[in-house]
Image (cartoon, rainbow, N blue to C red; front, side):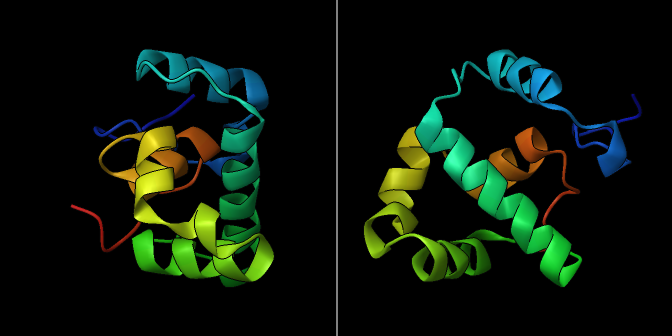
Length: 101
């Protein structure tokens, strides 16, 4: 498995659910169905648009596919911590979102 210095996979094909659980555990996150819902949406976004979503595009995609409440920053931060888009991308095996510090 090849990762960059920030822990993002260099090749999405290296990703699997076991790796996602490992990355999440390394970041003190226990994945639930609510997490998987967002992770799978981030992967769908990546497959459709060919880039990892930063916070605003991720939230808009969640609103479109799920509902407004699950797109809120507070909800996403409860699941994924202070930088939800970055953590979602890392756990989902996506590259670092371009607009995330």
